[in-house]
Length: 108
Image (cartoon, rainbow, N blue to C red):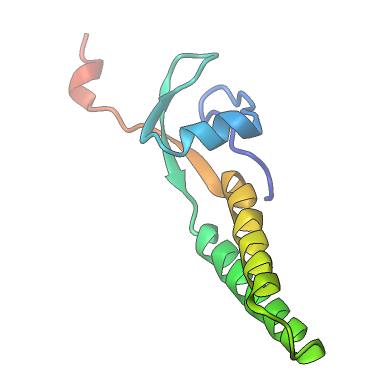
């Protein structure tokens, strides 16, 4: 389940950078078969961000318990690292779905 999306028509594999760029688009055209498909975020992305937030809070609390005289800089660094971790994994939660075309377009 933890994989990058593929074209729903020809199953062309897309690389990490291509998926990262395509997440800003609503409709994308396959570079291999030239058919259009929808780019959508999968429901699991909410779980990803929930894990990132809970992990960052737990790490911050652990550091504060171990070193109570800790200043704000390590807490900001941990929070920033958690956000970067989440952003790195977002392309794995992008899905490509076929575009539904009108039946009027198929009339010969």
